[in-house]
Length: 184
Image (cartoon, rainbow, N blue to C red):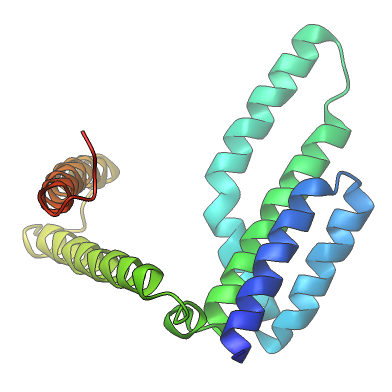
């Protein structure tokens, strides 16, 4: 068994455990262990994880605080548990991505490796397209784009990504159906 596959198993087990643990102290200990395992990259992984979950957690937390206020209950234990769990799982994921070659971890299954290759190529295509959109906005602006211009450009890019993803999904499902993968 290769080391990447062992890390994959450990990662899946740690994420499963993080979903079962409800005590904020244990979740905080798990977060501390994940950051300790990150070594010198701990602050970078923590910063990256905080940035990734900030909008989601802020929206959910504020909504939960409002709901708890309307029902006259204390939201703090639940909010601490929720935010610690999301942060722990996100840090574990970023640590896993930084340390593991997913292609080697999944090399036991040609089917999973194939699906990973498709997803990876799609992600690279979308990353290149996003860079193209960003450069196009910068090159077509005489001065730095205003916030509203960036919002409009982001909305147009998001619409393009959704259309592209739907088209690719349709093409893939038709190709798989023609090869007998779906029984109608």
